Image (cartoon, helix red, strand yellow):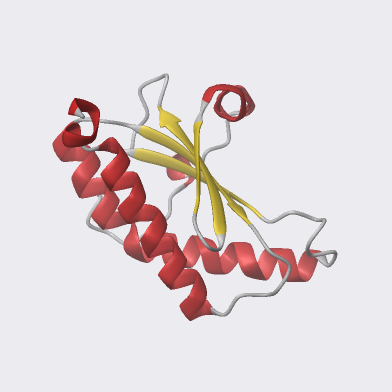
Length: 135
């Protein structure tokens, strides 16, 4: 596990159907301008501080090419900004599972996705910090 590298390895992807369904049933939810984010503490030991899955609904974007474009942008921005989240999770000794769903029906440009993903990561840091639990 090398958290310093800006890669997005297979083991960082949330693939377990059991974990995903549990996340939809019992996970925490928050909304940011562009995304709906489901998150929870990982039920099992995972090799990275977080596992993430991305989704773009077919209802808003009929074309698979467009859905794939948006998911590619989401993954790229996450890959570049995840170090901020990873450093916090390692300091707090927490492992998260995260499912990020695109909202809206317009194709966002890279800068918009970048700004929204930054909001998502900062909100996750705020929600998982020890000070949040004390209140």
